[in-house]
Amino acid sequence: MSFAHGLVIGKFYPPHAGHHHLIDTAAQRCALVTVVVAANAVETIPLADRAAWLREAHPQPNVVIAPVVDDIEVDYDDPEIWTAHVDVFRFALALAHGPGVRIDAVFSSEDYGDELARRFGAVHVPVDPARERHPVSGTLAREDPVAAWPWLSPAVRAHLARRVVVVGAESTGTTTLTRALTAHYASRGGVWAATRWVPEYGRTYCEEKLALARRAAKLAGEPEPWMDDLRWRPEEFTVVAERQLAWEDAAARVGSPVLFCDTDPFATALWQERYAGATTDEVWRIAGRARHDLWIHTSVEGVPFEQDGWRDGEHLRHAMDARFRELLAARGMPHLVVSGPPALRLETAVRAVDALFSRPAPGPGGTAAAPGG
Image (cartoon, rainbow, N blue to C red):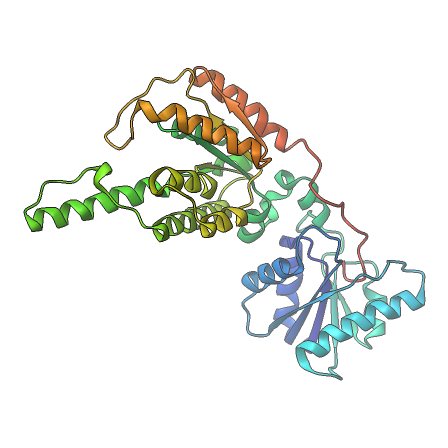
């Protein structure tokens, strides 16, 4: 049986494969489907994010995403509370389509689907109420994203993945540790097999900048320049910080529940300070947008300096090491310092990363589901 206008209501906190199956089923059977995303203001995942994730996952032209805040308490035995919730849903429908829109079918996997449909004067279409096709819930995704990982979309994975940044002065083993951590977690198999790491875009930018400078010098018949000959503009560090975050977000969408980053915009700000003499507010604003769970600072202790042709030199390594340590502490960033041989550094880092997955979910706990799930 087909319908003119179907309705799907939920919290989508966060969206998962069960939700997508519900929406796709409605979209196949209806000329138009409105998905009301009803979020409580105290919940930890923003309503705008949930709506954006659903729009990305459901680009069908007959699917309309209608976000709305629903802070009304939950009591399925109270008719007045039921009426208040339905009024919120009707408000969302009116915002999306104008007043007086008619609903022909309510698609739901919830026990209260019959009552919800009755209040809209519509047919209730149950969709996998036993959760047999996709045994997952929003609560599971928030509290144990590792267990829920197979049922999450790329956008939700990017949001829930724990992001670990490895930072430090030159020639302190940041890349070595980042690669080792990635290999360690990927070797666990299962959802961890897709563990990725994000390289340092600043290194790529420097190589390209020096190559262009050398090409220009050759054309002009001038001596070949080296790193110390390059001049830096503030906006270049903004580009590096933005691109670093873009690389990171792209990797988080296709990786495992943990992502390792060989530097971040915070480190870009420190290198801007080193090369340009001061940091800019724009780079710090970019650093403030990043969502990282842990910084691992690779100490100079236990790692001999190696000159690869790109590094400042041994004389600056200790000063940068101290600057990293100072700012990580001053800004209250969750971090640890690793020192000693590579095996010890890896062992220490793995314990800290594993601890990220044993902690309760940050922020307020989940709220009871309003009608719509």
